[in-house]
Amino acid sequence: MIFYSDVVRDLVQDSYKNLTNMVVYKGRQLSAQEYVEGINTGTHNWNGTYLLQAYNNVDLTVNKVGSTYKIEKNSAVGTTYGNYIKQSGTAEWAVLFDNSMIKTSASDTNKLLEFTVTNELNFLRTMTEEDLFMIVPVSNTAGDGVLKFNTIEFDGVANQAIKKFTLNFS
Amino acid sequence: MAIVEQSTGLVKSAVSKVIEKLIGDNSSRGYLYLMKGQVPTSLSNILNPSRYRVDDRLVQWNRNQIVIAEDGLVSTTASFAFKSSSATWFHWYRIDGEFVYQAIGKVNGTGLGGDIELTSTFITEGNSYSISDLGVSLNKEFSDIGYNIIPAPTPAPTPALGAALPCRS
Image (cartoon, rainbow over all chains, first blue to last red; front, side, top):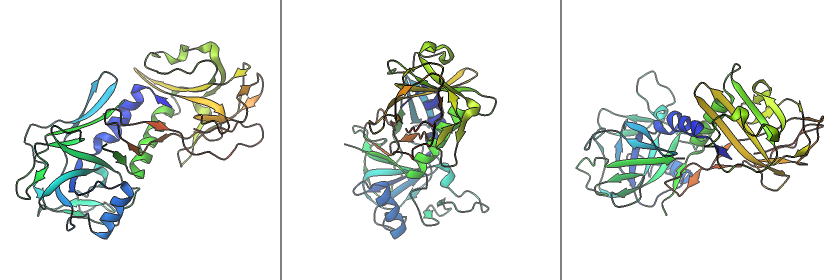
C-alpha cells in the first residue's frame, strides 16, 4: 500500500514528532517485547544495570527533503535536556517515548514515566507493548545511529549532549 | 544492521491517525474506488485525484459509505458496479483544502497477497459490492533508516457474507 505525501506528512507531525523523551542504554539492543520485560523486571529501569542517561523534552522539528520527511533535533549544539545521568558505559541503543507517556503534573494519572527534581527517571507502573515507544540504534557521528553523540563512551559524570537526531519517513 | 522497532501501541496510534486523515469528517470530500488497469507505482504525480483515471473506475464508495470500526478496520455499505472488468487496485483519497490524502493498494484473488483480496477479482456491472474489512498496518520493525515507514498488509480477515465482497488489506 502506498500513501501520498500529505498522509506521511501528518503521520510524522502527529505521531513520530512527539517522541521527545529519550533514554540511552548500554548492552545488546533489545526488541520491544524484551524491553518491556526489562523494565518490568527492573534490569532496564533507573536502578538497573543498563540505563546510562535520559533526555527530557528534546525539541524536534520536521524538515522535508525531496519526498522524505526528516524529524531532526532543532536545538543549538550542546543543549542538554536535563541532567539525568545514571552510570558509565558504551551507549548502544536508545528508547524514544511519546510525550503522552510522561507525568508532568500531580493530576496526571496512569502515566508511565516521570522525570524527577532529583534528576532521576522513574517508571511509575507496569509497562506494556501498548505504550508508545520506539527503539533506535545509537552511534557516534561516524555511525548510522538514529541518535548520535560525539562519543558513545559515557563516563557517568559528564552530560553527554545529543549531537544529532534523524528519523526519516517517505 | 541497525534495527528500528516501534511498540505495538505506537503502531496502532499511527495507523489510527492515518485512517483519520483518509476518512476526514462527514463533510469531507473523499472516495474509495475499485479500479482496473495497471497499478500505479507512485502517487506523487496524482495532484487531482478526482480526475485520475476516471475511465478505470469500477465501483465507487463515497465518504459516508465508509465505516471505521473501533479496532480500525474499514468497511463500506453496498454500491453497484458501473462497469465490468477485473479489479487490480484500489484508490482511496480525500481532498482537504490544499491537502490531498491518498492511499492505493493492490487487489488480488484470495490468498495471493493483495492489499485487498477478492473471491473473484472480476467485477460485474450492476452487481452490488461492499468491503467487509480493510485494514491498514505499519511494519513494527525496519532496518533502512532512510525509509523507515513501510505499510504492510494485515492478516486475513473474516470473509464477507452474501453479496458482500470479502476484502482485506
